[in-house]
Amino acid sequence: MKGQSMHQPSPRLSVGPLQYWWPRERVLDFYAELADSPVDTVVLGEVVCSRRREFKLADWMALGRQLRAAGKEVLLATPTLVAGEAELRSVRDIAQQREFTVEAADASALGVLLQSGTAGFALGPHLNIYSPQALREHAELGATRWCAPAELPLASVAGIHAAGVAPQLLTEVWAFGRLPLAFSARCFTARHHGLNKDHCDFRCRDDADGMLVRSGEGRDFLSLNGTQVHSAGVHALLEPPARLLAAGVGSLRLSACAEGFAHVLQVFDAVRRGELESPQAREALRELPLPGELIDGFAHARAGMQGSDVELQT
Image (cartoon, rainbow, N blue to C red; front, side):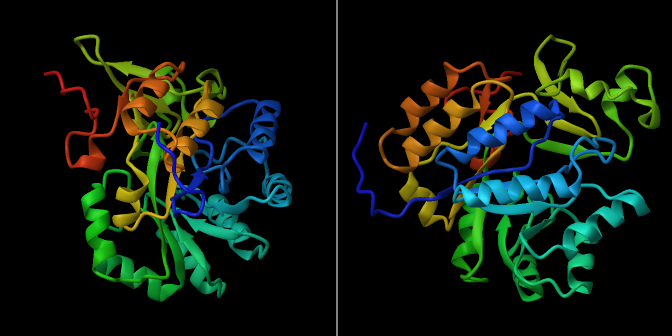
């Protein structure tokens, strides 16, 4: 371990919207724990499937007020894939509230935000922003923070930052959790069970971390999460704070898993404070009951399934 001055800059910690459908009481308990955690920012909202209706906008906003009272910055995220008028109405409702910053997940949300005259919005990780020119265009529209696409290498994020596109923008990178890789209007989980999306029996509630898919050779390959396909591995970006800051990264986004997440937050907090070095932090995460092996290939411009100290097996 290494000591680090508390006054030395370090990235903020952010918890992204829940990707999985957990029971209502479990969700409430989860956010109650976050209120007492070292997290700086919490992004709320149902971003995967509009059929997950246990929490309505009023519920998310009530949670947001509780978290804000606990000293957390709160954002409200729009759905990742807008596939109909009902979902577009949901986006409009989120955009029209003025209590919390809105995180736009797709182009339809951007359009609604601009039409409603909303300023100071955030850009979610699934928008196609891969260049200084694209980021500059969004900044000119009113964005004040962006979460880089999960597959964008850290060196590319640093290059965009070095271009001086919009120094006022807070740059965030995906630092922990299974990675959403593909989206569909159909439900992968329902289809696996021989059901259709409109009569899915809400089977994704049975999979607290998604449904694991293995290759023909028996290797963990992907994970199904309703309308999304995720990585089987758990992305974990454990870089020294100075390296992250040099790349322009001001915030690390962590995506929740069913077990051990409170300890995950402690590990990342210790790393950003300089109290734990990357190899030791990686070992600490491996001791937790995480849903998959640790990977970070995308961040280092390699195959996404690779980890920092494990070669991809073929």
